[in-house]
Amino acid sequence: MLVDNHIHNKYSKDAEGEISELKDVLIKKDLKQISITNHSTLPGKYSFDGDGGMIKKQIRDYKKDIETLRKKLPGKIINFGVEIDYIEGYEKYIKNYLEKFGFEFSLGSVHFIRGMWWDQTEKKFNELIETFGSVKKVIQEYYRLIRKISDLKIFDCISHFDYIKKANINNRFFSDEEEFYTREIKKTLDTLKKNNSVIEVNTSGLFAEIKEQYPSFKILKMCQKKKIPVTLGSDAHKKEDIGKGFNHIVPELKKIGFEKIVMFNKHQKSLCDF
Ligand SMILES: [Zn+2]
Ligand SMILES: [Zn+2]
Image (tube, rainbow, N blue to C red; front, side, top):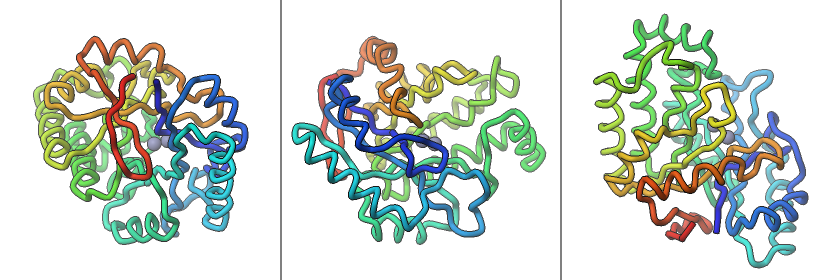
């Protein structure tokens, strides 16, 4: 039995597809629970041409589409969710946004570093190094933001935990074996453990140039030892990608020692077999 807690569709400006089309997908892929997690609307000064954020006026329609789908699939759990862009200093905006629209599930994501949209490319990573002075400082800043997401305790799940590696093809910027990197991961996982945070195993990285899920197996092994629970997310931006990579990742998670994964029903967590 599988879950997918990271799905985008046409309400994210960078994604496509109707919610009604998910009916057949859920049945075909035997997904018991999903969360549709369209990108949050960016605060005015951070929005830009080509951002994926939802148009506020459309959020009511988004919710209605989910209610219609639920009626057609009474045996499935479908959360009306959002992937929040965490921008430091905008905690109040985020809390209001979550409450105002009544989202039933939220992912906390770091796509901005020091207010700078970071598109996970090599070019942008180089700009970050210039801004911060070294690769080490960029990494430390990224994981500091992940710890803040966890400490806020307003998100149901933390998405793509080690996303900072996306442009690190063939370790061109750093190696996760370096001592400072491992230290940062340990510190961050300690914070997650303290806050009972859940981590998403995001399979989209398997199909990107980095060819690895977020987070790496090294980090997932550390999570398993610390008993930090995980859930699954495909980060699909079109319906064909829903649940993509799960066939590969599920046996790997079992090998590491995970016996259950987290499912969500309107903020309520429970563990399920997978
Ligand atoms: Zn994301
Ligand atoms: Zn996403």
